Length: 202
Image (tube, rainbow, N blue to C red; front, top):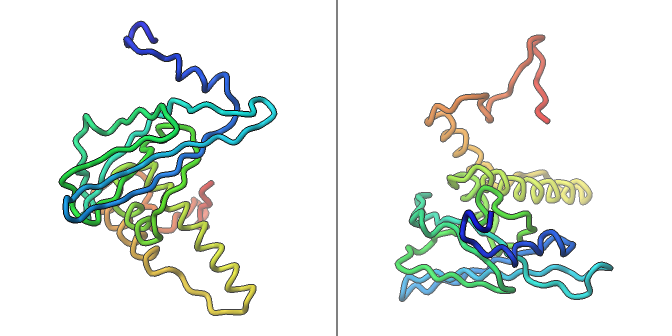
């Protein structure tokens, strides 16, 4: 593979010799004066009985940029980033305010991800991201938070409420599914089996 692609895969081989799953933290900063978005990735793998000190992994990051209207604005040749050091910074120029990075699209690397996205931003990614995996991942994060919120409300005997941003994101996904005429079951309509009962999706 290395010869065919004219690539140096020495660094990549650490995935097979070094144990543990890296955690990648993604932090953003935006300069409205220069319309510049800076995205910094940092990786960390905790020590274990196999290695007391972990070296940086070669982590491919497939990403995009979504403007406030949900449009992909990052040109295709720039969507794959090769992270080989402990930290890696990407600077994007002429970016509209409110633009969100969509990182690790297509599950480009088997890592744990920590972002600084707010619940509103996660709801936006869930509703608008053009990458199916990241839509699912944003939804799972929001659902987990919502379940924890509801459990806490029950334990404190408080009224049960659902986040308006989550409801809006679900409504948007339903509308998009129907407008695009995608094949398969409607994710927002209850399914029934041949006996008339509901279908449980696993």
